[in-house]
Amino acid sequence: MGSRSGTPRSGQGKTTIALSLLRHGWAALSDDTVLLCATGNGVRAHAFRRPLCVDPGAANRFPELDGPGWPASLSDASKWQVDIDRLYPGQSESTSTPRLLVLPTIADAPTSRIEPIGAKPALEQLLAQSAFFLSSRPEVADRHLSVLRRLVDQTRTHRLHSGRDVLNEPHTAHALLAPLLTGGPAPNAVSG
Image 1 (tube, rainbow, N blue to C red):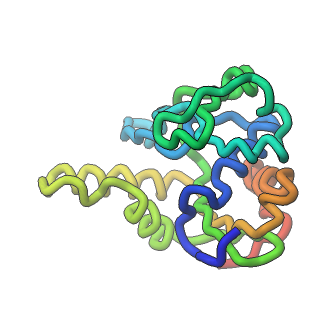
Image 2 (spheres, rainbow, N blue to C red):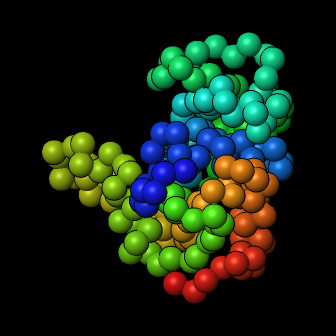
């Protein structure tokens, strides 16, 4: 874990969190990218770039990765392209309606924590991570912003401050996030 706070970069634990959650029975849409679509019933997330891009060193914490002979990732040849359905059969989804939005940051701390956050910081982080400014056409940017606002409005938003325990004890992410699925507070939630 580095000392950088903010949006996680490659090599800082996002895939470790995803593997940990999959190991505990969670489902996955995609590794890093989803497509969002506004519908009459809210915003739907659709799978995009389904395989996980996994550092081979992750097999030390997730022995189920070792052995299948994963191909090199198309985006980074030093990593494996791991098929979720092959690794955890039945745990990939093609679409879902988000009700919980967890935005991870890297914390230079021994333990992780989760906190509820408001709509404004959630929208700011989503905008920073999205392709919002890739279009010079105002109507496209307006539609993009509208979808992100609707996503934030339909979800409970939290920030996960990922400490070193997420990498060293992969069950940590599940223990912190599972209570949020039932609408309850996280075990160590702090008010925002």
